[in-house]
Length: 399
Ligand SMILES: NC(=O)c1ccc[n+]([C@@H]2O[C@H](COP(=O)([O-])OP(=O)(O)OC[C@H]3O[C@@H](n4cnc5c(N)ncnc54)[C@H](OP(=O)(O)O)[C@@H]3O)[C@@H](O)[C@H]2O)c1
Image (cartoon, rainbow, N blue to C red; front, side):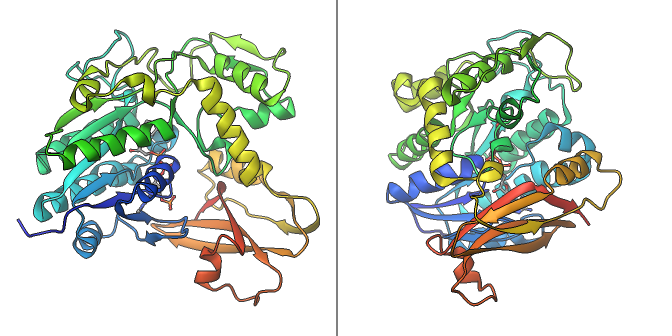
C-alpha cells in the first residue's frame, strides 16, 4: 500500500445530479475536495475520461485522496439496455479500476448503487436481502457492488432510489421529467402502480458527509448500506404534486395501471436501519418532506434558469443538431425535438461548444458576455459570472 495524505476527498461524477450536490456540500464543509467530470466542465472540476486505461489510477495518484466517492455511472435503464457494452464499461469496469486504485493507495471508497438491484416483489429489503434485478442497469450495478467490495474490502456501498434535486434540465431527474409535458399539455397519463421513494440529493449529500465524518472519527463503515426517503409516491402522485407546486392543471392526466415497456420493480422499499444505527442519526433530520424539497428544486431551477425552460428571451440565435446514428431512434427523437430557436438576453451571445469522448459528441450552449473576445477561452467558459452554460442530453449525438 502506497502512502496518501488524509482528509482529501475525490468525487467522481461531480458534474452529475448527485455529484454536484455532494461536491458543493463538501466544499462548504471545508473538506479538501477534488471533483472529476467528463463532458460538463465547470468551475473547480477536473475533466477526464475514466474509461481510458490507467485514468482512474492516474487521477487517484495525482490527488492522493483519503476518500473516494465514486458516482460515475450510466444510470438510464433504457441506455444500459440498448448500449449494454458501453454502459458496462462505465458501471463495472470503471468501478473496478477505481476500487483497485483505492486499495493500492489506501483510500476508503464509497460506491453509489441503486434500489433497482431488487425485483420489487417482497419489500421491505434489508441490506442482505436477495437481489434479483429486472434490468440490465440493476445487473450492472450489482456487478459494480461486487467489484467494489472485492477489490476495496473496506469500502461502503450505498443503495439509493430515484433522486431529485438541483437540476441542469428538467429531464435530468425522473421526478421532474414529466414537468415539460405537463406544462405543454402533452402529458395524458402517468404510472400509478410502481411505488417510488424519491430522495432529495441535498439530504443524500448530507448523509454522505455524515459517513465521511464518522469514518474520520474512526468508525468502520463497511459493506452494504441503504438510504431513501420515507415518502412513497407513484409517478402519478409526483405529477399531481408538481402541478400543485407550479400551479399547473393536471386534472386531465389519468392514473395509468398499464404494464411498463421495460420491466420495473413494483416496490423497492429499503430498510435503512443499518446506516441509521452506524451513523447514530435521527433520520428525520435527513428527510426533507418532498413537498418542500420539490418546491425548493423548482424555485432554484427558476432562479438559475436551467435547461430547456431556461433560455431567456431577447436577441436570438438558432441551434440545430441532428442525431447521426440511425439506430439511436430515441436520441434522434430527443435531438430533433430540441431543434428550436433560442434567445440570448441583451449583452450575451449564444455560442456552442462541442466536446467528444468515447465516440460521443456533446454540444453545450453557452451564453457568453458579448463584450468578450469571440474565441472561447477555457477559463472564460469556466467563469460563471461571465458565462452561463447549458448542457443537455438532447445535444448528445452519436458519431
Ligand atoms: N439519479 C438517480 O435517480 C439515481 C438513482 C439511483 C442510484 N443512482 C446512482 O447514484 C450515482 C450518481 O448518479 P447521478 O444521477 O448523479 O448520475 P449522473 O447525473 O448521470 O452523472 C453521471 C456522472 O458520470 C460522469 N461520467 C460519465 N462518463 C464518464 C467518463 N467516461 N469519465 C468520467 N466521468 C464520466 C458524468 O460526467 P459529465 O456529466 O461531465 O459527462 C457525470 O458527472 C450513480 O452511481 C447512480 O447509479 C442514481
